[in-house]
Picture 1 (cartoon, rainbow, N blue to C red):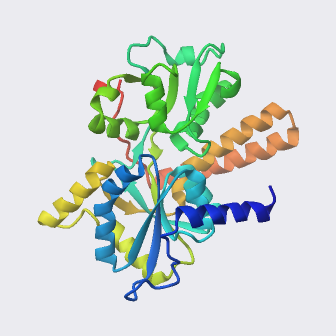
Picture 2 (picture 1 turned 180 degrees about the vertical axis):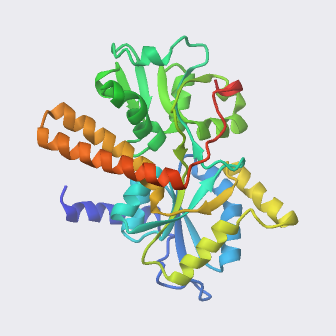
Picture 3 (picture 1 turned 135 degrees about the horizontal axis):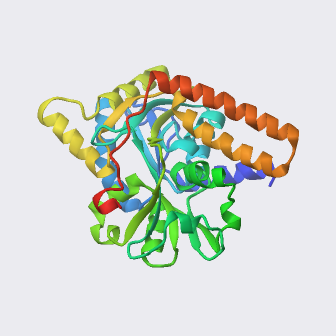
Length: 347
């Protein structure tokens, strides 16, 4: 597809999906500046709207901005929405967030934390609750299993399992299983629970959310593998070229939300609970160092498979440089791990 055709398709996509999205550089009626804010659509639109409306209402009230929510249908829509200036700020998970920094002129200004205060979560592999399947069975690579993974840009659904589990064993998932189905976390849970898939990647946040929304479905799956380290949480990103006054209004809102004293703070925390959130902490682009390391690990595996000495050396150098950067960063800002989800009902 040519660049012209691709851009035309994307422009049409956002024109159709975001007809209500006003341009940020044009004030809304009443003189308020407009910010189109994107969120990945992992549930039905009406469900998302119900969950997010109180939060967006508070954002409008406290910032004085006209906030237009855009529920992006997939990771690509999140990235391209910011790239083509259809959205000015948004909620990103790690891999699409890194892409937004690289190609969409994005900048991290806040990170999410859980209600318990933790700033991380785990990648997991789930199986049906009554299954005898183990992670060793998954790694046999005998093409007997139907396996589910996440979108290629999903940190917990794809990048983390590759980095921690498959790459060290020199395993390419597509050549390992009978079938490999790529879909969202919610769909993978349903497929495993119904026996369509033998196992699938997922994350602990999705299971915590499922426990509150559908405890019956939660009991139908169990965790058979968990990443040895927590993954960094989602981030809030705005465009670098956004008006500095608007940036500060957004930054102040996120970093203060849920921290007010008394009844107002309690009300705000209750708004965050259905979103499985405890609030926000300051963030910057160093947030993506662990994700870059996973990415470099995959590049190294591909280079080693190619047998090209120059490419192997290049990939090794890149991996070593990011490892060094991560070690220096972790020494200054160690990440607090979430509670072990393998206990009780999560096991």
